[in-house]
Length: 344
Ligand SMILES: [Zn+2]
Image 1: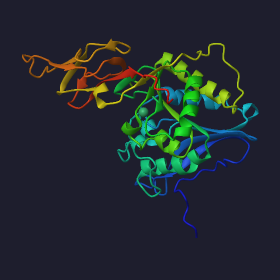
Image 2: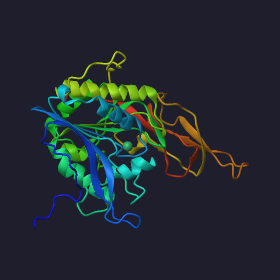
Image 3: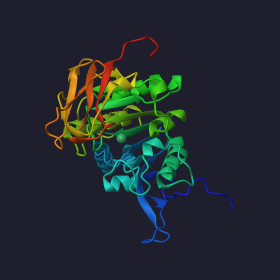
């Protein structure tokens, strides 16, 4: 018998017209459930010919704007409005999403650091492998919806490049970014990228893929949610896969301010363990050597707080939320305006 390509299974037939809502079965045979599987929600809506768009959220389980966006979208997707195929995976790392955690409570892995995954790996690696080998190859476009999660809050931002992108793809990604229309867009230098993310795996397969960072803080920020929902719908309409109506209150596309961070100096980290007092806010323009925050030590209240200073000049796009910090925790992340180089 031929070895299966994946150990996950689904009853969804991606080649069949119609709206199919089911679960991906992630094998999980444990003490309380021999032969059991974890139900990863998966939806495919297809009609006739056209592009395939893959929409993912919950790659980090504690990032909620994307999960709400896709949950709401699934309910209004009807085959009559579709030309092509829309595949939606709203809780991509299902165990993490169900627990409201960034990483999986089963194997402690971060799904967005294990792509392309392995067929016979741990649960999170098997999920990455399924997405990379079964879903992504079917897609022409992919949106991977993230936000800051429990520990960070982001301005509504698109991640237009998080690693090396094939040259021919970059103008098409920028076009989709313009259509999505978040107020901020990040292009990280190709050399700096993680390379093991969902989006980086997709662009290696030639998919026009981009990510988002929409709010965070372990909650749903309504303003970011509206930007996210409108952006997804605009992209679906723009590529011709969906002809759904424009809602009366649909957020218009913003002019995107393009940002970059070409060194790790744009990230500010806690230098001590303690209690973090931020001295700037999201959206502030700050300068190198400006004070970013104080770290107090209530355990030894007679000690002066440690000062943390920015190492670069830029816009505060991301800020730590919880007050308690440990040395090495990210406190802020800045963006510098992109300088037009003419090479796109
Ligand atoms: Zn994330």
